[in-house]
Length: 304
View (cartoon, rainbow, N blue to C red):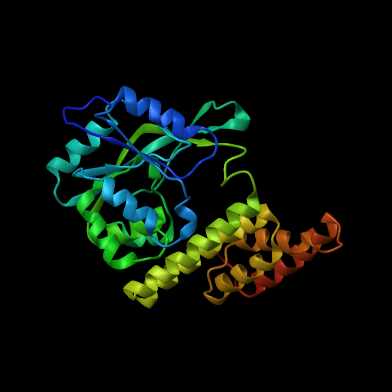
């Protein structure tokens, strides 16, 4: 559906799926041989965790700009690429453009809902992106020459989109186009969303890889600290959803050690901890109230 005044190719990578996707890709490649460029694996590359997936994609990517759209998602704006490329062509100081998007849940019959981002800045976003990942991968277009920095810094660590954005933001400005150009689909049986514990462990895996990346580039201690506190708060939320009290204890200690406990952190943590104890909800609430009173006596002020 993309309407542009420049040529583009669609590189479709199938990582040895077993559901017939490869046959559909072949059909489209036959219909649009100048556009659809298939990469059909016979062995899963992602699971190798050796950088092979990134090397393969680089070998097949020849454009000046790169746009990403992951398997469950799709674009809805026929001028998405044109708008983003036009901006990059006229603003050399920017290396990446991302947009807003819609979200669609399978459990809600894929009715489109707004996925509004708040507080997203333009320009130098390095510090901001250490605290939270506000970039929707399915909406980005970035300069292909930025990949040289990823190759130098990330090495054989498994690539994550957050890692790439942090890497790129060290060298270029980002621009946010506040328009809905794509749809992020949440499937009940997708790898990420079907199991809350699965998602928690995926986030833990990504966190460990990010810390390895920080070691590679010798990130300043202050920047590492900013990331760890924000990440611990995010992971504490997922511990609540997954009812994982052991990890919740670790993350809460990380937050407390840095004096950044909010009222939300406090409530989430104690709900998770009490769920594995033989206590009624009434007992849990009473314990929380007593502890909250202690916090207030100690000067607990942050109620966000």
